[in-house]
Length: 253
View 1 (tube, rainbow, N blue to C red):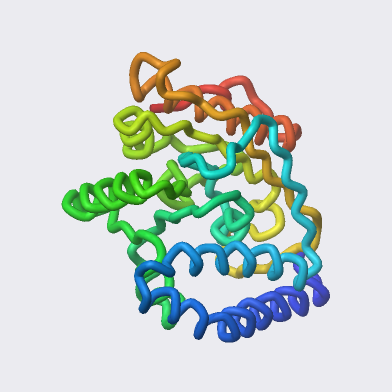
View 2: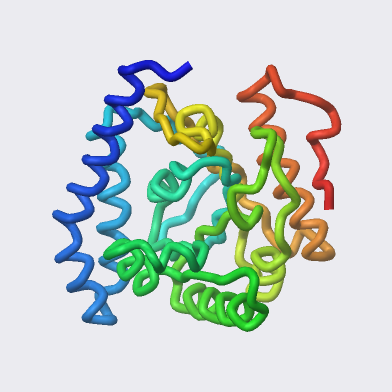
């Protein structure tokens, strides 16, 4: 049930998002127009994410299970149940390039920022998917990390149940021998559910950076994909025990 306090809080968060982005937009433009400054634009992105969650009084507990080496490239893969997920992935360390849906490019100002500092993909076009993997490979070669949502969008009808993962990120990891760090966003589907009316609930959020999965330890990209799925799904069910069922523990590919 939506309360008046939830509505007021949602309006406050929306205003805070727009105002903070407007304040930082000139800095983003500078980093876009000078190509060698692109990585600083992404660093501002991280500063924005952490500052934004503090400003809206929504604490994010980040648990790191393994060692994330400074200066090393990783592919961060997270579940995607909520529009809050993209902002929260700003907490991942290092220079991280995001891969998002092509529809983001249509958002005024934000779309311009995203397509120039990150990568937008049209999953309905084979050519766009291939170009995305090429650009992602180049970003990894330059020493950046990647942030992707392997479900390909918000598709689940029953969170925290994952939908099958797409293959692209795992093929890229095997090709480049880049470690994958599974990321679980435990409660975003409760804080901001994917519903017709987007209403925020103010409660603590949780992000888990799991142990890195090294491609050399897997015979195929399918095995790597299945293990990544299992790690994230198990954590989701652990943190949301009321929805735990045995059939949720395998990738329904």
